Image 1 (cartoon, each protein chain N blue to C red):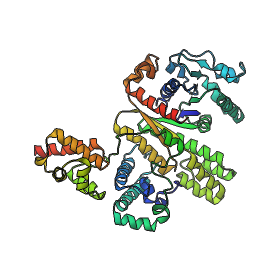
Image 2 (tube, rainbow over the protein chains, first blue to last red):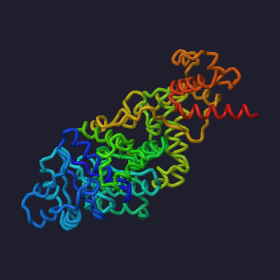
Image 3 (cartoon, each protein chain N blue to C red):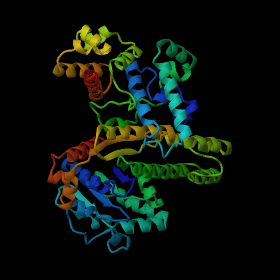
Length: 295
Length: 199
């Protein structure tokens, strides 16, 4: 099972959640590999309390090693391994889609029960493709307008990219590209408008767009919530996505704002190990157990 | 199929409830929808224009007005039997989720939705209860609160209400029986009571 953690702004807590969820899952006896694919600042190792790894994915890409599992870094936590080297991963993936698919296949063939990929911020095509290629994409959002806005932008880019991959006619593909521009000349505002426009070009493709919307179920984690009202924002985001995109977002859970989080990061000790009884650690543990149930 | 314009959605889809939803579920869904699509909602401003939000707000009110009225709802179901009455909903309700979602769904126990603009005083509680078609006797039976106390709660006869420690418990139970947020109801009611006593 591959989960990708992306969307939102930088600083929304994706790496913190990835690292701590990985630990929680590994403690349940699940073999976990964490992959650091944060282009802007790969530092998942720091969240795990280990030094910058000597081995990274670049050793695999540059064929210094022949198998991906050779660059896996063991951690002090049983069942948990780390794969570092995000920049190489994404740069290479940008270069050729064949290479990208090969990378995904190599990742999929790793001997592991669960793989968590920390995608970091940004809407580059590689980030979107990794998000879409996983078994489950997870968006980490904080209850702030900027974070929510960026998440919608990411979601729209990912959703439209998925739609584009599903249709066959070049004119509908071009239409989807145009629709991504909010000020497009065709007046397409929503995916519903897109379907209507596609219907005039290719009925089969329009139907495929509708079907894709029915099977696209990204997940949402709301981080740094401070009140019950904040928690409810997750439900509001879910409703807004249903009304706007026509997609069912799954609200996976929330993590409360907790000073213990920054304390643990400063100490370079994962929160679920350092202070497993803290409120934030309990929230992460609960979400991880839901992921474990999906195995 | 959920990829529909707001105009094409059924009232059930607008409120994200099943066609078999109880009045309690509709009330809760309505409050959530109002909270989500209020003018300053950070969950919608970057997706919808002001005009679109207004259109959705109107649709929410229309859906609520019809679905909370037994006769109107029956008539609506008859005229929309293809999507509303006889057949299962094409989506919205929380019970219709993908298999994995069902397995991984978190229970947000104790969480319900507040309509920010509303303050739950006796009058509002009575209105909500009546819209749901729930008799006060039923609430009394369910909550084990005497009918007289419930009447005094709704009529805001503060002098007839029990001591604060009991009152808080009664308000909580009453709110829960209507599917409302117990904390908000208690806070709102006690605030009103405090203000009345000052006068």
